[in-house]
Image (cartoon, rainbow, N blue to C red; front, side, top):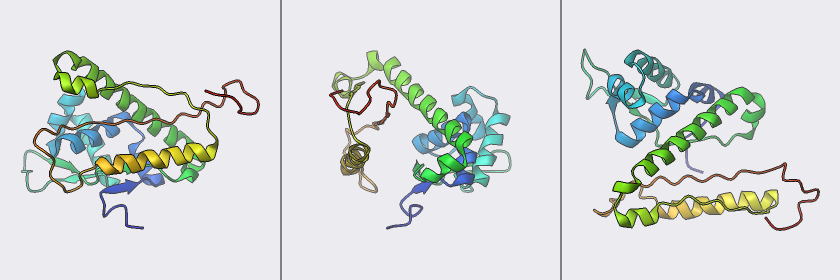
Length: 199
């Protein structure tokens, strides 16, 4: 298995989880990944917070290894920051037991970010080119699965997504950034006793 840091992926440990368990920090990392290096002032404007707040959270993210100063762009008056990784993953199930509050806060921050992305896309729907309107999709599928089937579905979706990634490969001129959000949400209070039946 390759080192996740080499491929631009960071797998959260307890320290990283606590560092990211704040909605402003999740959004700062997202902005740096999407738009590239920036200053605390510019990031603060995008988020609607003051630059002191953005600077504080950037320093916390830097100490945890999620962002770093971009020395090539910075000067004595202006510090530039860049994301170190392109993907963050929470895969250690033990963290849910060891750091329940941090996992809860992190997941809520991610859900808020996804909601914000959806609202932004819908706000741009009227001016979106017709072909891209056809691509936009908000769907919900109710499935009745075993734990094993749910895990297999998650893995298979990951394999499909991997086929469309262009890591290091140049995209065609008409390609646009597309954000794909998947959610597999177990509904454990669905009123069934034995899990039988169709969803």
